[in-house]
Image (cartoon, rainbow, N blue to C red):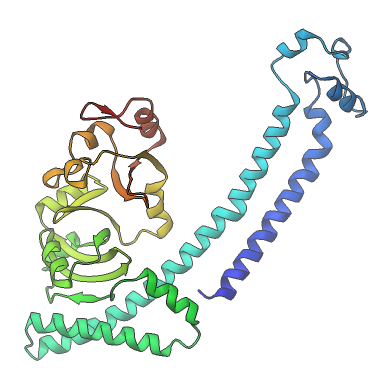
Length: 353
């Protein structure tokens, strides 16, 4: 999706929001006097203001400011606050959320088309190598070389990207993106069990063989494609799960163990906006203790006492520039988050902020 497309989306959504907001105020402002009818006026200035509105009938008993007037339940600021709230609601609904969803759908469509194109090339090459009796190890190496060659070709054909864009891309990426085909094909009875997953939070320093070796602990891997971003990489995995992996998947766990690290996984059919929904209800604990680590929170590949007692579904630890660390926790619902915030959070007899 190029800059012109994004500009067009922005103009269309901005015009839609502008029309909605104009219609709202054209409908609401003439009714303001009716909305304010019967309101308590607590200052002499407000009395003068409302007396100038012919449709507004001020209670004669409140024409002068009296102490009892301040005891009334409704004030004019309630109406003004409500109008402001409605205005921002329309802004978010008509402009911000709509634009994000539109961009997310465009990006997902682009990625899907690229994946299908690469998958077709891989299937053709795999059939050719398999028919000639090539070993699986050689197939893997050949496919990695094909992926790197395709990347170089795509970069050389990109005449539109500016130098600034290339520099920004180099800063955000620390490695190559790869496509891995193992040569394994699921049996007829296992095809219905095959999972297509997107896995986040994998360390970027992992080699392709290390990643494949760890994923094999989840089951029989058919294919893996990776995308590196800074310190982490995201993997799109197709595999036939073993018993433990399938049990974890059916339990609906948000976080699973891959080697010595917890990772987040999603169905590959989910859109970017659907994945972001899992980040909707979150809480942060600042300046966490030094002994609060991934290993202590997620010991031996399973959630520890703090995770279970907090009822959080996923988490990540972020280190700030001043070397302090923040624990970000994700919850399924607002109720679960509220229950957690209502209680003091303890870590080894120390209350957390």
